[in-house]
Image (tube, rainbow, N blue to C red):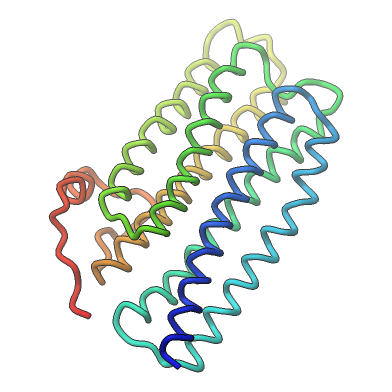
Amino acid sequence: MRSAFHDQLDLISEQLVELSRLSARALNRATQALLEGDLSLAEQVITEDDAIDALRRECDNRAIDALARQQPVATDLRQLVTTLRMTSDLERSGDLARHVAKLTRMRYPDPVLPEELRETFKEMAQVAEQMVLRAGEIVATKDVRGAAELTERDDIIDRLHREVFRILLEPRFASQSQQVVIDATLLSRYYERFADHAVAVAVRIVYLVTGTWQDDEPEVPGREWREHHANGAVPRAEQ
């Protein structure tokens, strides 16, 4: 009976990794549609978000069923509880990719971004995609040090997010329409939040391994948290 239960836990972990992969692919395709003005690809991203939602529901139902039937304790209980939080983070990541695709569709055939911002958004997309894939690896390996590493990557996204605003405030953008500025601001927020969800997944893995929350706001760990975990200093909780 316990063997079957742990098989269920392994399957849940695999589904979380698959959710991270699907979210990363959605953002990759949404960004390609954004930069290339590809309406067909944008529509595909929007449609395929249903698969992410369905996998999230399946994973949640599996976790809830295990909670009800097995009455787990210690690490097993934490895994099921954090699963319900992580599926939400990863599903919302997919939603953010869908928002990028919807904005592309809304402005088609006009480009959404001015030329001056394209490279910045391309870099944001690459880093955010890598982050959610890394979050999936951290889920699979329960890698506390990897969680600390991921928060460092989030600094890159935050820097690029600020760079978008710096460019938008340059005098040469004074002649741009308000719609261009609003669209760029929204898109930057989408990518920034996508990265935040990847960090949140990683921080929940720290809770799974240690049994303690390290921050009241797990989406934005502080410097002390990063340095502490980067050194592998957090003790494993009692089983």
